[in-house]
Amino acid sequence: MIHEQPPSPAAAVSPELAEAAAKLRVLTGQLMRRLRAASEGEGVTLSQAAVLSRLDRHGPATTVALARAERVRPQSMGATLGALEEEGLVERSPHPTDGRQAIMSLTDKGRRQLTEVRRTREGWIAQALGERLDAREQAVVIEALDLLTRLAEEG
Image 1: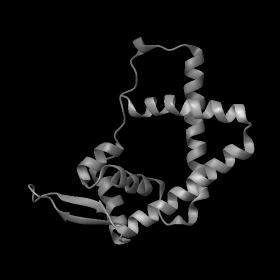
Image 2: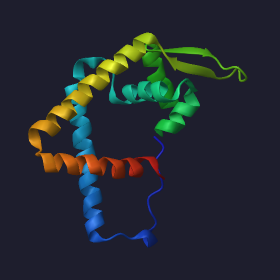
Image 3: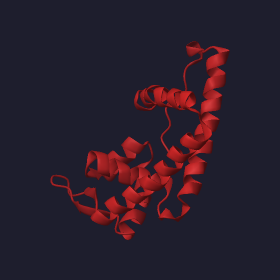
Image 4: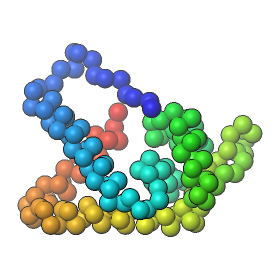
């Protein structure tokens, strides 16, 4: 897996931000485990679902481009794509200009599978938000989503 460089010591943060970062890291892991558990019977792993989702949102791509986008090694992405291809969720076609590469795209079966995975995972999240948080807390979570999206997409 390709990892971003850790911040330099000169980029010191306040103790409050360091604590928030630690809590966010732990929380992210907990949420991922809960989502994995909520969709155990769906037939695809979280990493496979991420690839299906990327192909759905951005269209066909090479293994290298997908690996770069998902921040994993091309060999790891190749294994993920191989499993998805074996299940008929993605298909391979020749690259138009580079015979060494292939273009991977989502199949109709892959799109249906992705829709079901999203429905299950998003359903769990929506239910948890509705049952465990009051209206004010829900608004705070909704507002924080834009900020967290910026963190995930920048840098």
